[in-house]
Length: 160
Image: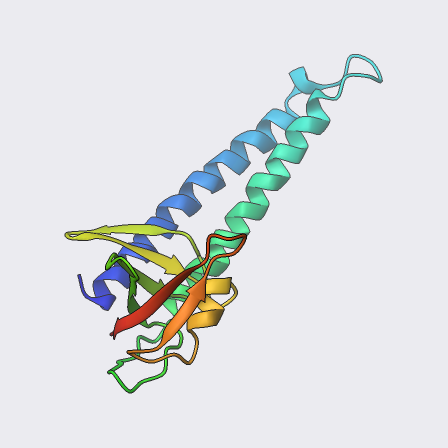
């Protein structure tokens, strides 16, 4: 899968998530303002709890809107073995056991997993420890990832 195809997949996924959270926020708002949620006494917090849920759903929808806009405006860069890793890099890392992981350094939506024919690509952001550690690295460079005794050494084997 090319980076352009990955970008399209991310955008479609975020659009679907936005629609889902928008509908959830709307439903939660309707529940919070429904006449059956009117408190029966001073201890009835049903409407208040529903309003908290509505606000949380609306906040998540806004975060997704920001991520969607970030990916719609993302300019994909080309990289080679001499290029330092930066935003839009598709990076392949190899651990000491020879296991490979592919990561896309994106502006938002860290943790999103995109299934591809030979595995998956995980979106990471520069704000994550791994994303920050990758910035400026090149093919052949090593980096430590992890903590609490679970650190592993990875080698950058490809940057596209």
